[in-house]
Image 1 (cartoon, rainbow, N blue to C red):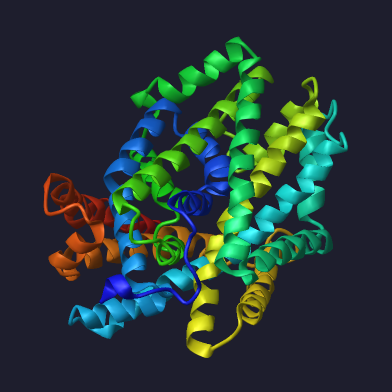
Image 2: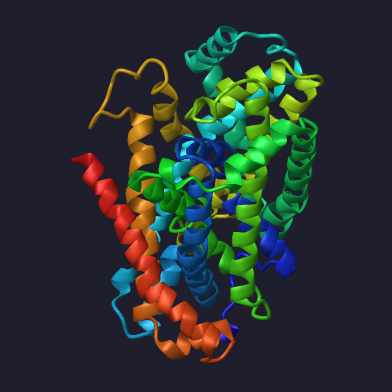
Length: 455
């Protein structure tokens, strides 16, 4: 019965397109903006090692479960969870897991679009040579000038939301496929060009290699281990409905295990390449890698401003960052759009316009958090900080935990064996152990740490 179910939204034309789309969902600001500075704050090599271990033991099994549920349900995450739960003689309340993911993606997109707008602004800033020979004070001043201007931020936020909404409104084949078919290869090419430039720095590239891949456990704290687990989870876009809805467009011939491993590998590769592109530039300019969120928007423009061809390579870097943000943004609103099409009978154009408009409106709260509302806090956090904290540290870990529980404990064993199409052998049993015990334990640690940070 489930093998005959089809999605009303269409289907990926090939497994490679699915791989590009799902990798695009996973690869975003978290890989290129967040991973390098979090690694820099936690000592480099030791953090990277723990991060990779978490990808393998936690990320891959949960991703396999999420893709499996998506392909079995063939609907938006909300309807998928309801349908599968009823078929398995379980409570239809499992649909709330779908709601959790859809709402998390909606909230993340509201501030994601604001930060992505910064990347669009910096493409033109660096390309125009605004950072040429600039001092640290000049660079910081230009950044502050941008974030303190709500009208300018609103313009970039609006532009990013419009181009994202247009792609989603065109559907699977005409919109999502065509976007990722171009954007993902372009992203990899641009990143390789930047790594090639970093290699030309000679000893500084070697210093970056040592920093990333020589573990120094003296610099790794318990919080650093937790940060590595959280980064691995967020980086793979788990628990927000994106991977599940993309899985619903996947054909029956594609191996779920192959897909999850390939996506995880590509996602991790991008994070590693981003570090190799960024850290040599940081070291070459006498800077330190522990610059927090300012590593990209404050530190790197300074580096680009003092290198030969810096305006070109700087614009190239922020173009890369914008591409990465765009491919992730598309997947963040797709689950909500799919739900409106399925349940309210809306056209994709109308549903995309509605969701895009609501996300845009909510994003104004995050936008104002950097200027007019910067002093308005709740639990010591601005509107932007609170939304980021609730989604990244509460909603996504909970979503991942319940996906692991449902796919490993609630779903009938025969159902998961059927979907994975690899029999009840060693590979399946290894996945079952990881998704039932290892992954939930890791996610619970992250979640308890997040709750503890609130108190």
